[in-house]
Length: 433
Image (cartoon, rainbow, N blue to C red; front, side, top):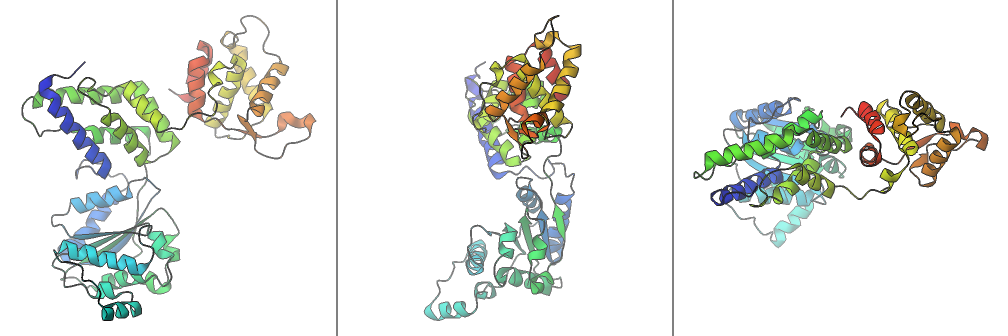
């Protein structure tokens, strides 16, 4: 249903607000649950630096896309007094000297000062002492927080000059003055072991762990947080827009098909950034003629983030072939990614005894063993089934180990598109949705 003309500006502002939130990956303080306690731990550490002038250091550890940057930014936003924040990345700065120069530039910019251009004498002195940019900083009127992305890259540098200077400055503080905090972020769990002895002795060894979404329910909750609350910048029609937008969001996230698609995305990779890209695509496609979030829009957004399937013909396979794929699915659900023909045949026969009509057999005989072997061999020929170990002698091929190159999502899609009612029921029993 097209949007009334007096609500067009609301849609435009709503899109801008959500896209901004998705780009920054930051919600307002207090909106997010904190199951890991990471936000509370970061808030306590930064409060000590900002309010009591302490020197603090910590390492935020978690997989890529788990929300490390988001947690740090939320903790900084929640502070009553905003410190000077310097952000450095091990991938951006090729050496410690350039990183220290960038630190100096960001600090002076925050103070409204220009970065001095090095004279010949100054340049020569800096060649002797690469820590000169930090030593030349003026007295700071506010606390300093240095956020180091890709912390493990800094740990791989010779002498680790940047880390030594920062952690030495942190350790030298005794409170009562202007505090300094150093926050490293990395996905490498052995990062602390890479520190040199002199650097490790100055590090607090405080590690704050951040984990990705632990369930599809949490994943859906994150999507809801990005979509809501509604924009309130305009007064005219605000109440009407609030009701319409909230109803659209809640209707989409309550739909079983939408939840199933988000589950597939979450199972594929537990990465918040993938969810951000999906939601960005969906929001950017809204228009006054199609202003509401729909299943079709979400499907298109998710599909745009996936590469084309290598096996588009799977829905056209016979019932016996689809049955073998479901047997693979069932083995995977039980935690067995490696299988043999004998295992798949046993699972297939067990289903066929009770549901012969589902496999297109009617009251006739079951699919002969030769038919299953032919279907299995065809999967091997198409590289749907790939060897997991060196094959045995030909007489023992039914015991050879294989893996399936088709993921669970593709099996589900193939069965839903090409399988009979009984085959789909078998899949539904094992997939749980």
